[in-house]
Amino acid sequence: MAVEPPLYLDACAAAPPAEPVLAAMVGAYQGAWANPSSLHGFGFAAADSLERSRQAIATALGFPAGWLTFCSGGTEASHAALLGAASQVPKGRVVISAVEHPAVQAAARQLEAQGWELAIWPVDGVGRVDLAWLDRLLAPPTRLVSVLWGQSEVGTLQPIETIGAACRRAGVLFHSDAVQVLGHQPLAIATLPVDLLTFTAHKIQGPRGIGALVARPELPLGAIIGGGGQEAGRRGGTEAVALAAGFAAAIQLAQVRLQDGGGHDPLEPERDRLLTALESLDGVTVSGCRQRRLPHHLSLVLTSASGTPLPGRQVVSALWQRGLAVSSGTACASGRASGSPVLRAMGYAPELAGSGLRLSLGPWLTPSQLDSLPDRVSAALAAVQADLG
Ligand SMILES: Cc1ncc(COP(=O)(O)O)c(C=O)c1O
Figure (cartoon, rainbow, N blue to C red):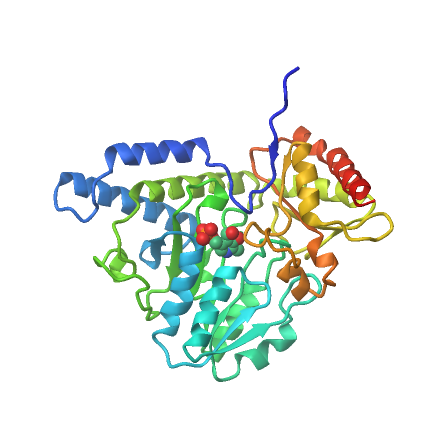
């Protein structure tokens, strides 16, 4: 009997590289392998490939190519944004939301160690920043705000335009980690009231090890890595030409999907159908915001029929035994025994904060594969409950 391959439902952790992405990278390794700074034909070919990739990404996302600095990924881009912007202004207060990715938290803690005041913006029960705090948090000495656009663990989208417009009025710099929204909704970045944005390629079927910081050109920004003056002096190190080609190919694929969906991610109706089916199972409730959520993302909190929280990590193992690759919270926090800090920030009790489950979809999944999920989830939950006694 043929054994079915496991289904991959962990796109928010990393997505499998698409064939055209691999082909673009092979092409760049073959034809543009030289150092883009070299002053000969081989170098010119590499520089040309790099700039074409930059241009393709910028065009797809609606901003001038000169705004984009390639770097190693989302973690580096967020550090470059917060530390680079803060290095050019007098010390003041930096505000981050209570549900930021650990990369932004770490950069903000570095600023705190340098003498900045750090304020954490509370969120409500669905993980949205509480706008009642907006005026108070933007008052002097606030100089920098960072709010995650799409929350990786609970899928909630933040009101980025409202926050950005308020930051503009207050003369405060605004950064947003847009890693999870990339490729899942149209982004007309040039018209957004956001000064700095973080992106990474590997969540959209691009290669690991490349990301981008997008910054408005008028913004003074310190270099995070010195060296040979690459990336307009902002990021030293010989550029990853082939990874940039893969990143550009991944963005272009995502654009085509969004166009096919009339400006919406075609995964959204599939996700909604799955969410309705899973929600009808005993002990399953949705976490995060229902209306304003990442279109490929589904997050749940799990209890037994009698209300006892089920350990998310055990459920993940039980699902893997049934051929489903999912996660409990984010990949970065999945080793934590104390429960999810994101769910805790949303007001979940400590016992329940360890009971999260995340399913994140990608275009490699078919509707009939997704139809097989509710039964498998139901069986896994029953097995975990039986184990717990
Ligand atoms: C919201 C968010 N920001 C930043 C990152 C870090 O990106 P990278 O792995 O490219 O450093 C991730 C990846 O898990 C993420 O989900």
